[in-house]
Image 1 (cartoon, one colour):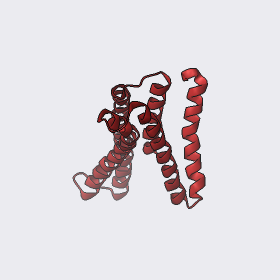
Image 2 (cartoon, helix red, strand yellow; image 1 turned 135 degrees about the vertical axis):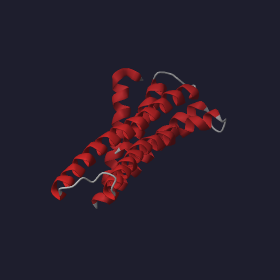
Image 3 (tube, helix red, strand yellow; image 1 turned 90 degrees about the vertical axis):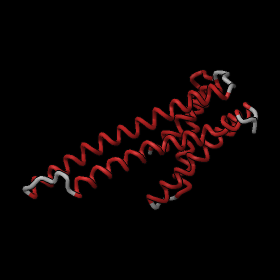
Image 4 (cartoon, one colour; image 1 turned 60 degrees about the vertical axis):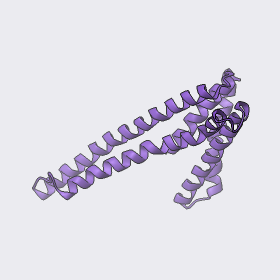
Length: 169
């Protein structure tokens, strides 16, 4: 889910830059990386706090049913580790997908591609990533992977269409 957020946010930053005439890859990267870092911390902290609260409640319910405290036990440590692991995944996933969508702008800064092509390559990376994320969901649900991939792709195309309709073009 957070991977989807990373792609969509980077797509939005890239579209906003493109439609507003910003062509300098440094500005697109600054905005995109700033958003990616914010999503990392949002995903990490939001999940950590939620997981910790839910796992603490679960541990207290377990203590109540066992009629004993579970402080400093393997169970308590497992709950803490699981909370941090979930938080790390939820923080890293949008960061990685954002960086992937922004990679063409890094390539432009390194002189590998020109600034204008970076936009189109970034859009392509975003759409391919959305489609692939959809296929993963299709596989998980044991449904048609092409339908799920297409639905994710349509979500990305909707962002483009809405951006154009709002007059960003």
